[in-house]
Length: 168
Image (tube, rainbow, N blue to C red; front, side, top):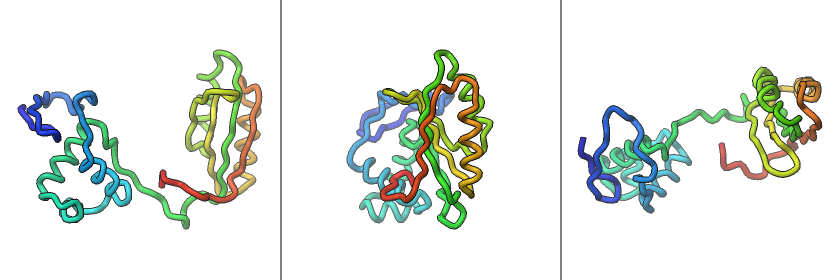
């Protein structure tokens, strides 16, 4: 199918694939403004976005579709309000034995309190983000992490307050 990309160039999109090569995708200032507006409130209507950006509704919809197909927009999500978020959050920094990361990750995946695990450079190998309704639940999860085979050492940081969070 022949399409016109956001830079005005003619592009050929293979309908059998729902992903456009990211190298072909160029993000301009209008796309950045659209992404910022959607980041602030992904539930805004296309008409509302078009009005704020000074564009035609069809132009905004085309750009959103293109950004989704290219992977620039990976999806939409729900942000939980303070009333239902876990009351206690923690970060756990871990060093692991050589070649034991898969086993450690399996153990971390089994813990309900673990929200995410990130590999890191530097002194620590992994960083886990935890959340739970009570400090006791966080403590139990920390005990299980420390006892996991392959974990050499940990450093735990209990979150006291959030000063800035652009991910929410």
